[in-house]
Length: 64
Image (cartoon, rainbow, N blue to C red; front, side, top):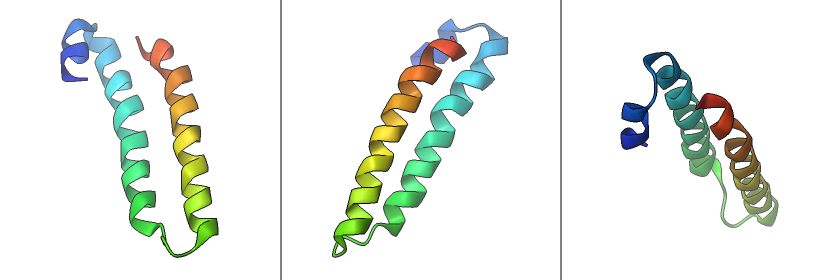
């Protein structure tokens, strides 16, 4: 990620970093709230991981 930002135009760096750091922050926040003993909590977090995957798949080309 760091190497990729050096190759981008300065105007795109902020958008690229935001598109990576915001989902990372959300992932960290929600991972702290998962209750491993509750199947529903784990299932929702698993679905959130897939949501992040597809969101990154769509956002990545838009920020380059």
